[in-house]
Image 1 (cartoon, one colour):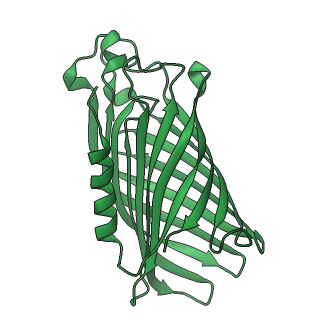
Image 2 (cartoon, one colour):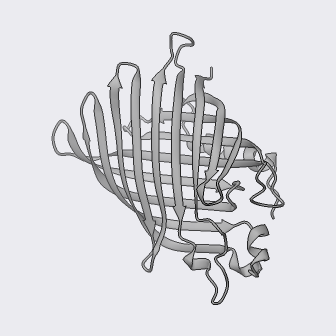
Length: 269
């Protein structure tokens, strides 16, 4: 497998800081997690730490992003040669296109999402998409639906596939693709918010990935100003057909993972 070091982490963080305006609000995240591979009845527990930033430009463009490092207790050894740390990053840039009335409008969105070296054998993933959609917003909820187009790349870690006979040229799949995204952000009470997201990626020929995210956030500013507590779950199902070789078993014996997190967000500065 390829080795990703702290320099990789710092490189992604530097890129995130360049993309975010100097007036951004930065926060530190820290917590615990479980990466579940249901097909193998596997639970990989660990601690995680990250940084997140958000800002709004004078033109009303909203930017937010995060980078998180996950440190794992790798007891199940799904990957026999795994370094017990992986990374997850995202950058979202969005703004209004045209207001239809006070609560409904058209908008645009750019999403950049990445993963490195997961326990579930994702060696590297890059998703870079841009598109347009519509949103509905009130004082207590915000609903959105977007159609996006862009670039999808997924590289499978080489350790498990080599056992099944796959070679060095079989681990990567990249393609132009499009994505459908539905999201909701609901204020349950003055301190609690519920966020949900369903997203689908596909190329012209086949589906690539489905992802489902649920997060509950609770304001704990009475403990520390600007802080919040989060419980989240993100389930991802990958299509492994693009890697399939005739007369070979699937490149991996599983095709999904679920990341469950409990973490705090604390403002920096």
